[in-house]
Amino acid sequence: MEKYLIKTFTGLEQVLANELTALGAENVKAVSRGVLCEGSDRLMYRANLELRTGLRVYKHLADFDASSPDALYYGIGDFDWESILPRNGTFWVTSTANRTEWVLNTMIVTLKTKDAIVDKLRVGETRPNIERDRPDLRVHTYVHDGQGSVWLDSTGDPLFKRGYRLRTLEAPINEVLAAGILSIAEYSAATPLVDPMCGSGTFLIEAARMAMNIPSQNERQFFAFMNWPDFDAKRWQVVRQQALSRVHRGQIAPIIGSDLERRAIRYADRNIHQSGLSKRIELHEADFFKVSAPFEKGKLIMNPPYDERLSIERGAAWYGDIGHALKHYWSGWEANVVSGFMDGLYSLKLTPKRKIPLDNGGIPVELWRIPLYAGSKFDTLQSEPDSDVVTEDNTFHSEED
Image (cartoon, rainbow, N blue to C red; front, side, top):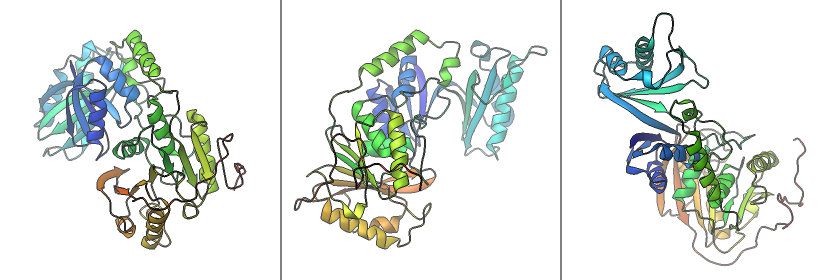
C-alpha cells in the first residue's frame, strides 16, 4: 500500500477523514490541514475524482534527514528518480517548511530539491527541465523539525476548481469550504435546503451535487497522475465509470436560492446551468427580510457579507435584523450561518448548538449551527413549477445592470 497526504482547509480535517474512510482508505489520521492515509492507486484515483473537501492528493516517495541544506540535497538525491522521471523530462517543485532553523525562506528548500533531481539525472547535456504547466512530475518537499519528506502531487490544478463557476460576485466562498460546511451541517438529499443570500450559487450547486452523488471532479479531463509512467488508463476508466454509476438520478428535496441583487441571480443561473443542475435548483430574486420558510422544516445556510471583505453599512445591527428574521420567520428550521464578523454573529442573539472555527481564504470564520424552535406556520416562497428560475415577477432578469 502507498501512503498519501490529502490537504484541506483548517476545520475540515475530520470531514475529509470521513470521506476517505468511505472511499476505502486505511490507517486514516487527521493532521493539521490534512489527512494521512494508506491505500492503492485506485484510492488515489477515487480521491482525486470524488473528494469534496480535499484540495490536493500527495503520494509519499521518501523520508530523509533535513537538518541542513546539504542533508536535504543528498536526501533528495538518494531517491531513485530514474524510475519515475525521464532524463529529458519536466518537473515542478513546491515546498513547505516550518520549525527548522536553517530554513529562512522555503525558496531554498525548493532550489535544493530542484538541484538534487537535476544533478541525479543529468548525463552530459541531457537533463530534466523545469516546467510549471503540466510537467511530467509535480514534486513537493516538506521539512519539519529538521526532518524531510518528498511527495508527488497527483492532482495538478487544486480540487476546488470544479469547472462550473463561470462568474462570481465579490468574496465568493470556496467550493471545498462550501462542501465542508454542508457536511458539517448534516445536509442530506431528503432535507429541503435554502440559501437566501446565495450570491454566485456555490452552496446550491455543491448541495445538489452532494444530494445526487455526482463526483466533485465530474467534468475534469486531466489530473497530474495521468503523466506518471505507471498511470493505468484502464483502471482509471473503471474507477470513473463506477463513480458515474453511483449517481442518484431520482427525486431530491427542494434546493432553493435567492438574493436581493439581480446580478447575483444572473451569475448563479449561469453557474447552475454550466453544472447541468438547472432542473434541480430554484432561484428567486428576493429580499431575505421579505420572505419566510417555504416548508415546516429544513436547513437554511447563509454566508452573509462581513466587513473584512465587504463593507456593511449597519454592521452588527444588520446581523441583528438577520437574527430577528430567522427567529420569527424560519421557525422549525436549522440555520447554518458562516461569517468572519464575530460581533455580527453574536448580534444574531440566537443560541447555536455548535460553533465551528473554519478558514475562508485566510480569513478566520465561524460556522454557527442554530436550531430555530418550531412556532407558527408562515407564508412560503411562491414558485412556478415549470420554470427553473423564478423571480418576483416570474421572469428571470437577464439584462445588464
